[in-house]
Length: 325
Image (cartoon, rainbow, N blue to C red; front, side):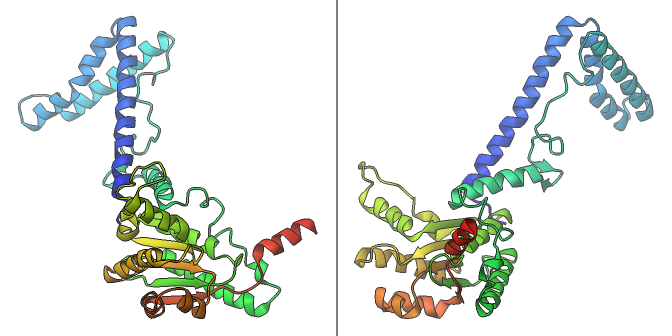
């Protein structure tokens, strides 16, 4: 997998900080009780010698046995627990209080990444992918095919589209997954399902970016000309070229001029040349794409992208009718 490098570094730092914080707080509680409870410090010193004692046995530097050392440790721990309870504290008062008891806030369960760290990376991935606000609602599970049921042809088609996009997301591989273009009018589910694809891809550990065409062009303009406040946006456009999956929503809503078409061509062409998959959704049909954009863009889209046609009636209108009814 190829988690976003910045996200991975940031999450690893979060986990390192959490682990050290839990250990540090436990040490502080231990020092507090050692000062308050007579005999506790001596027991802790004896327990701290367990490792060196076992090492001496392994190196044949001691006449002790492993079983004998284990018996001493069991006895010392019982005495320690009794001292804490007698002092009015829980027996586990000085234990580190990790957020995750499986990985002990290290992020790893043995050699495998812990489920808690995967969740943290997914949340970070949602934010960097640009879908953190949409991801709770736009999932495959929440996509309701009943909105297309009034038209049998539309229902059958959208069932097929849904299945293909889910299979695409579940089996995503940046080395082999194709480019897709989603055609169809407004309110037919293109945004919902493209976000669902991005969500699934992020959760699988790949680096995805979801963007509207207008926002994407705005990033290129800021990178070239500087933002409205006079500052440049640095490498804000790099993510469009380097991510494992790029999802461009609402192509055709941006202002079309020589600069914007140049940006769109550069993104499409470079990602094709580097073998990085892209999903484009638009309300334009094939003829309108050919008219609106240059032949170079149109030929790249129609030659390199697999089309999926969204059909039916505007879901938002149907939902509003149902709510009123």
